[in-house]
Each structure stands twice: as structure tokens, then as C-alpha cells.
Length: 579
Image (tube, rainbow, N blue to C red; front, side, top):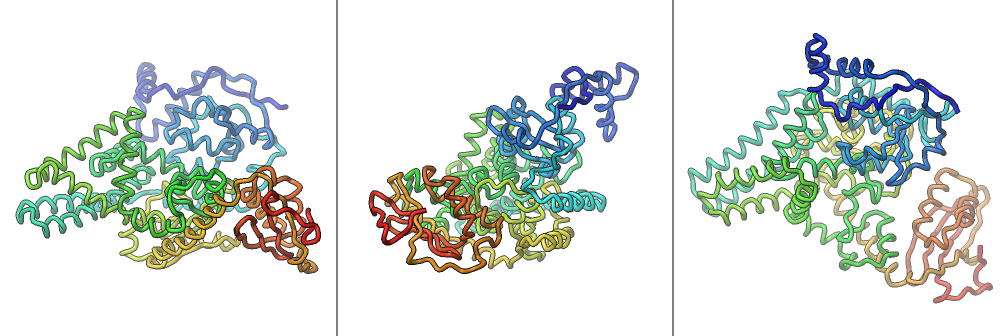
């Protein structure tokens, strides 16, 4: 064990406001901090009120990875080890974000999600408990160190090129577009009356305004417009609350989890859509084990098309209201109420109170499929998995795809057609994403990672095509519900189906491990032993999975392995050999 110098006292600035720091400096005859001087003022205040002491320990990755529970959360940032257990509830991004990275290296996600990491590190200082031992790598051993270093170098290059500096004129025009559409809708109904054709027309105008407002609040929620976080947060409340009637903090709570663990089940709330939908290869199995069946999952791809117009008004709006009320976010509640007040003042003279409510929800129904399809076209067709502890770059690239760049595509998607770049650099202003795309694509090519970029119509079609996968998932789930109620399963390898091929046993060791890992989630805990996994890795089998009646067949390179319900179909030694 080694020791280092650590500041004495609690060293915390969490409970000290900037006002307090300014007052301290003014009392000493110094001007209050402002602009860049605020950071130096905070650092100076910290340095003055702390004296060195000995206590910092060093830790191995094995030790750190044990602290990944709700009541025991450590994480690593730039080789420093922090115990965030007691501070998780005060984390502005929500406690779940920290929980998702407990026991892991969070260096890249920390840099990606914070506008000014230097200030945030001051809040982390009291939570510092040690650092990685000198012989330990910068990140977990399963991660590609060279890829991590190359990505970090790419980020430094983009910072040097000012790719994180926003063009305020761009966002001013975007906000102006939204306000003009809202004003135009009122002028039209005031001048031409509230007939059916006029109502339908202004509904489309207001739908465009609401959808573009969704994209603008997304920019502000990611702190990608103003250099000061407080201005981003204030404008986020204005756009999300006053222009859309939703809670900014509710959006942060959901969306930040989606960003830090994209397409990771069940950590990403955007793909944890059960029991309405089951996505990917793992969710059907999980629901099958629990015997959860909400409706006929064979038809869920069709139901997705029918449900999408109602997701925002029927699901997300009530969820936002419950979140605000349950957590007592009074400021968000006030902003959301102002949205309804504005609509009633504007349109109730023409439609009355009931008619205005109908207009509001008609607009939300029209907006909902627009937003749902734009956000899901980049994720649903991509890899959905359980936690694999990948590096930041690989995790985002594998879970995300782009849509081709054009003026219309950029406007229609709010630049979310550059989801890969956005997920890698969430605080980057969206108008710069197309500039960095070639560099990201080059890094993908260097390490053999797929960089998926498709036409918009194909992207929409892939959501529907994924419906066929959802259909298969529904069938998979149905079979599991009906047939795998008994816990006793045996791992069999029917000799009649085996055709050994020389040289195929040890190909792709890493992918074999991955396949064995997936196998654990397909089998019952009683069956998925280390011995069974070792057998899979040894034979190097990879292939497709079929669920039929009372058995699961996994067709691999060296043969077919079958899991059979022993009590339903007793083993016949003459037909198969047990492993």
C-alpha cells in the first residue's frame, strides 16, 4: 500500500455557492470572480482553506470492481478512484447514471457529459479516496487501450479545432422559427376563424413547432449552446416547460441514462419498453422466464406502428407529470403550467376550454410518431445487449447508426441523423457534427468497427424491418412461456447432427467467449455453469438459436447443441451423448 498527500478538511465546495466565494474574496479586498476568473477563484479558495495530510490509497481493478452495488459505488476517472455512494442522490444527472458506472472506468463518459470538467472536479475532490496502483492499466483489461487512447486524442484534436464552440446565431434562428410558427397559427385562426380546415392546417404548423422545440430542448439539455451551464439549464426549462409543457429534470433523468448506457438492457430506459414491447435477443428470454405476457407478442411490430402516435401524449406526458410531482420539482411544475396557460389564453377564445385541450392533444398525437421514429431509427435496428463493459467509443458506435447528410434531413431530424457523433460528443453543437464525421469514420475503420450510415427512408424501413425481428422475438417469448416452465434442463450434443471439421475448434477465441456469455442468458441459472461455458469455448461453436417445442437448438460450426427438458423428453443414451 502506498500513500500520497491529500488536502486536510472536507475540501468540499458542494455546499458553497459562488456567492459565498465571491464574498470571501471581497472581504479580502479582492473583486468577485466572474467569467474565467470564477474557476481560478474557486481553486484559490480551495487551496487556502486546506492543508496537506496523508491518506490516499492505491487500488487494483479487481478491488474496484467489487464496489458496484447501490449502497457501495466506486468509479475511476483519470486513474483517480472516487467513492460516490453518499453523493449519488445529489448528482445533477441523477443517481442512476452513477450507479450504471459503479466499479468501472468512467473517464470518457465523464468528459463527454460535462461542459466544464475542471469545475466538476472540484466537487469530486471530497469524494477522492485513492488512485489506481501503478501497475494497473488506465482502464479495465478487457478494453482496447490503444483505441481508448486514440479516441481521447481525437477529442483533444476537436477541442483544439473549436468544434465544441456553438454558433449562437444558428440556435437563435432555430428558436425564431419555433416562435414564428406558433404566432402564425394564432394569426391564421384569428383572421380566418376556427373551421375544420383551418384547425387541421394550424395543427400541422403547431406540430412542426413542437417537433423543432423537441430538438432545441435536446441541444440545451446537453449544454451544447451556451458556455455557461446555468444559461443552458435556464433556456432548457423555458423550451421544455413553457414551449412544450414537459419537465426538464424528467428529461435529464431519462435521457442521460440512455446516453451513458446506450442499448444496454435494462440500463437504457429507451429500450426497456416492456411489457408493451420486447426488443433484441435478451428481453424475450427474460420475459419468458418470468412468464410475463401483456398481449400477443407475435404482432408487436404492427402494434408499434399503431401505438407510436400515442406514446408522447399518453405515456411520456403522464410520466413527466408524475416525475415532477413525486420529486417536488416546483420550478418545472410552474414552467409546465405556463405552457397550458399560454395555450388557453391564445386559443380558448376560438375553441373554448375543451376545444383547446383537444387541439393540444391533437398536436401531440401528430408530433409523437415524428419524434419516436427519428429517435428510434438510430438505435432499435442496432445491437441491444446486456452490460458488456465496452470502451466508450465501441459501445456508442455499435449501438448507434447515422442517416445521410442533407439540408432536409438535418432539419427534419434536428441533426439527430448524426447520432454516432452526437453520442460520442453529446456537448458538441449539432451544426458541427457533420464536420467531425469523417474523423470518426476513419477511427472506426482503423479498428474494424462498423460505421453505419443509411438513407432516411431505409432508416425508417429498418424500424419496420426490425418489426420482423420483434415478431421473431414474440414467437421466441411465446415458446418460452409455454414450454420452459420446468427448471431442469440438460446440455446435450446429439451425435447424429455432429460433423467435426478440423481446425474449427479454436477460431475467434474472443467471439467464442462472447457467444458463451450470451448463452448464459439463454439458459436457466442451474444449467449455465462454468463447465458448460468452457465446453462451448473449447469447441468454438457459434451460430443461430432456434426455439421449438420443448428444446432449444443452437446450430454451430462444429455441430448442433441442444437443451432439452429432461422431464418432458427423457434422455436416450443411444441417441445422444451428454456433456
